[in-house]
Length: 377
Ligand SMILES: *Cc1c(COP(=O)(O)O)cnc(C)c1O
Image (tube, rainbow, N blue to C red; front, side):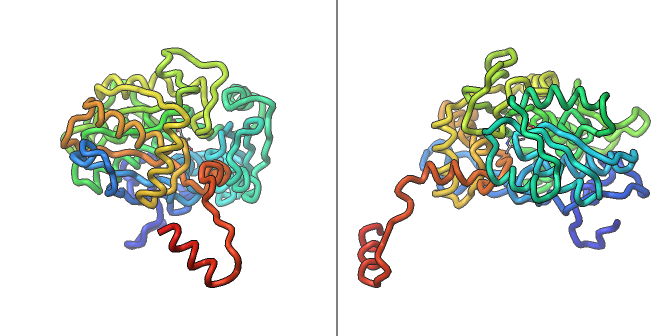
């Protein structure tokens, strides 16, 4: 597949830095190439001294960054002759897996938690033809079972423990550097299973020509992407944010009953534990946590003040950036990028429930509508 100038997806765009050959049949939905949008309406003076950009990953084909990893993982699975893929998911991985499996003509099996899955994500997995198994447990239970299935059934795991997932996801870091013409000073990101923070660190490191001490690599030694000339001369400090009720990186150990409104990061046993710690330590970064109330307030701020509707888990990256700028941990004048991991339409229930009084009942008459306008100007 050749682009001829027309954007056809991130594997095509970053082909030289990804584990594909000219013969590989690429499974793509033209994912990636998402906008980097500067926040303009911050009320806090300190925040205004920084440049804060969001990478709006909700604009990927299935509405989350998972598509970046899935194009690579399903492309690889197909090239290995796999007939079926499987994942455990809080929702977005299953939506993405179902879509790319459909595209590739493969079967997909997804294990979702009992309740606590956003409606849009479930709808996607179902209509895209996945075999949806709702288990009586949480994401961590699903993950444990999926790992056992790798040996018990002919299925390829497409969770982020699959190194090809992280290879695809590292391209978001490339796009940020390409858009800014340099690396940001700080990168802020929600952390659940911790694959994405690890993938970004791999991407930022690769573009700076530095091999991370612990790399999430899908290459053999003879085909090392770190032999490329660097595209930029620095790497950002990596800041990972978790929901307070689901914060193993803050606790310093696994959490048994994770709970948060931000269902995409409701994970107590992150699979990329070591990679994420390496990213944090090597970059001089830190982890922090925020309450559900803080997460929802930031989601609402982004939607109502910037016109950016992301899902609750995504908003935590901006909550973290603003808090760390206010406290001075991120100094004034910094260039800060935040990943908005998924689209707000994924979870309409949460959006509606925190917009109480958002719909006014009005008689079907001009006078009544005029009165309502004047009362609400
Ligand atoms: C998957 C996901 C996350 C968490 O990413 P990890 O790689 O699991 O840390 C955050 N936000 C959204 C919307 C997601 O779908």
